[in-house]
Image (cartoon, rainbow, N blue to C red; front, side, top):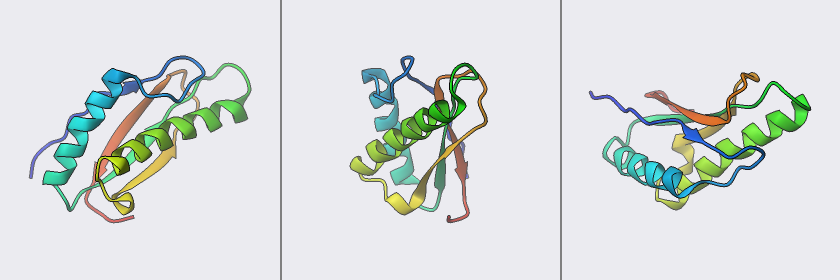
Length: 103
C-alpha cells in the first residue's frame, strides 16, 4: 500500500504550542492523509519522568490534542484521528501510529 514516515514533533519544555517547523511537518502529513483516506492515525504524546506525573500526562495529552486540532483544521476528518499518551519516558515529543482499522 505504501509507507508513511513522519518525524516526531518536538515541543519546548512545558508547552503544547506547535513550532513553525512542526506546522510544516503537519501540513505534509495532512496532504498524505488526504491521499490515503482509508487510514487512521493515532497521535501519541510523550511526557517527562521528572516532576508531577499528573501534570506531565496532562501536558502530553495537550500536545497530542494540539496536533489533532491542527490536522482537523487542515481538512483531515476528526473521526480518522485520535490523541493518546504514552507512559512517562523523558521525551517531549509527539509520535504517530498509522493504522487501517477505524476507531
